[in-house]
Image (cartoon, rainbow, N blue to C red):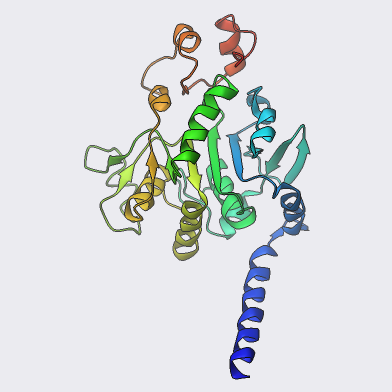
Length: 289
């Protein structure tokens, strides 16, 4: 009898905890409005979230086709407003900065208390919609030429049961520009690792670890070191695709048309205005599969 009573009490406590987690106010609306969408999206095992400062900057024509590959698609606009709607199998999303900040989601880009697209995306996929087995985060200036180009990396990552897919995995030392000033307060033991994360894939368990880190420390850490370091300490599966070799820092050279046309199996960064780039390259659309 005592055991049964304890079990019931624990169940009630768990229910209260879960309910207190989901009932986050978003402006005048409860977070439950987001959950109504998630209910219809649970058929998807995976998700892709494009991060942008304007929906119009995302012109990857293959996005709507991911619906056929068990991948839900989100475009997160970094506007300071609460909005969510679905069009052509794509969820368009924006979140007020204060909502994410209140739950500790800031500093993803080395700006304490500042909330940007990455903070909001991690807030959404760890606190709101956390059922996906794997989530891709891709910034708007990453150019993925075709559906096949994306799926080549995605399918291998899933086959290998990868936890983190990024360009590189480099130990943090004094040569890294951010090693002293910016991440000196990082709440994980050394060694630390870093990568360029404008395109990154994260498993459900890695996202859960980020939730724990944020809840414990009341802010995120710079994503370029957070993802890789947690994965190293947890001994998670890391995948560094050769297709990411053409993902570069903004000051590491210009991407030319010839490279993209002749090497359509690569992912490219940075290409800020992809519509203009396609026009200059005399490419009216993304290459077909």
